Image 1 (cartoon, rainbow, N blue to C red):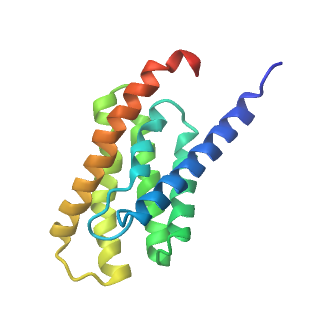
Image 2: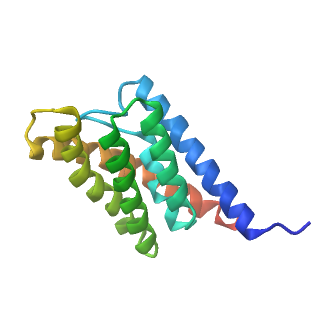
Length: 160
């Protein structure tokens, strides 16, 4: 039985979005998904555009849905999703350099999320403080956990 590549890509994007939402909800239960100090376990999936271009859409839709479900404010829903989209596109563009490919989501979230925290949620902390805390969370999620995802995906690349 021959499979349709477009259908497979759409299903893969939908599964990525669903897993992103579930991992964010789990992190939210632990109090890690939102705020100045956040470690979204789902952000480890931001390395998937290295392997699948459709992961860009999956991550963006997953972030959008996760932000809506966890009760984020409209500015956070919009700009948090844009940060994820920018990071995913950057990761895809650096897919030949696994180590560098984890940087775009770290940078986009480090720049955008503190602005959202200040203007959407009225957090009075200094931008640089929130940028540092968001950056640390993104390094844990994207660089540390994401490197494990890259390692596992490379290990099982023959089966994809």
